[in-house]
Length: 338
Length: 107
Ligand SMILES: Cc1cc2nc3c(=O)[nH]c(=O)nc-3n(C[C@H](O)[C@H](O)[C@H](O)COP(=O)(O)OP(=O)(O)OC[C@H]3O[C@@H](n4cnc5c(N)ncnc54)[C@H](O)[C@@H]3O)c2cc1C
Ligand code: FES
Image (cartoon, rainbow over all chains, first blue to last red):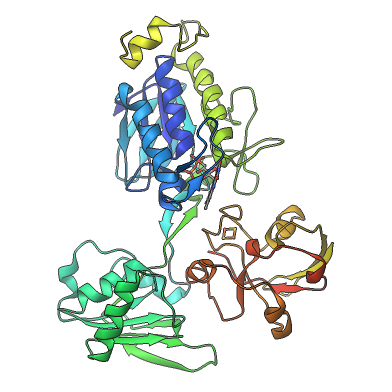
């Protein structure tokens, strides 16, 4: 059990800057994110796109913003728990017990939900029949590629993951690549390679088709695909792989007994606390009259929520407002010498 | 101003007057019309504002897809050749009378 002052759910820009604000006022925090990297939407959806409305930074990409935020909280040495999802919150004697999917447990008086539009999860096949093979022979990511050796593998998708895996697995498996149109999103070099492999019959390339049904009782036998004119055919398959990118899903957050308004959490604008004591929500996931889903709003919300956490984390102390330019305590916390 | 008709997968019809300059997605969200999630708020990075334009004449009349829209549609639920992302359809007088059909679900 890890004891801390605050658990932050989500390592997007809002969660990161909030960690900075907590560090400044002398509180400790632990940051959990479902993604395998830090940065939320900025790193997952638009790492190379320039942002033009971060105050005092005329232009920076999603990746640059993330790297600078990481650099800014470096002095505090907070721990990140990536590839893990906050699953369950339980209240015990005015403390929150936070449990993650991978079995980590935290004890804390404060939780700050900076979960954006939810956790990033792979998009799955729309067909119901695919569910019963989910995780065994219908997969959305690859952990151990040796399982595909000498097997029939049907890959769906047109982006880099689909193309790269089709190329890689074509060495040792019987690969079929299915995509809904003739053009591919993936890198031109990979597209050319796929076309070569298809000409040389190393890959069975089928375009303008999409998944219709997954066949097999007990073990997977094949996958039925269809085109827009209603024709369909069955391709033999031991494994079916889908690479359709990530989607944000509210997931467990919906089950924490918080008031919800569509996919957002209503908060008060004094300290961004929710209807539950000690649970705060900031960034894209919170809502209040006039809410703007902008990074700069998330920064402000995080600064106020951090102060909101202070009274539960240090009930016997009084929070003192201080400037970073003037306070020697803050400078000590930042490890700066002047 | 344009009158836009949104038809849910179950057939329920909604009609709304949308101000020029808003997207067809924003028109639905602001009027509480269900069936369009728009998780990324119009950033063309979620494909949860997916609609079908079933009328061929309308489909060809719409402004062409920008780079990236088809790539994003690859990730949508059951995309077809008449699919569009409603966040990329900006309302103008020209869109008066447009009908969009929602897919069975967005995710
Ligand atoms: C294409 C695009 C362009 C944009 N351009 C701009 C711009 O120019 N200016 C601007 O201000 N904003 C812009 N935005 C919006 C901006 O990216 C968001 O407002 C911002 O990312 C919100 O930050 P956040 O930290 O609240 O959430 P997010 O960035 O969404 O991060 C939330 C994180 O929480 C994690 N998470 C959720 N639930 C759990 C859980 N249960 N357990 C563990 N982790 C969880 C998620 O995996 C995610 O990493 C843009 C967005 C997009 C998509
Ligand atoms: S709102 Fe996300 S792609 Fe249109």
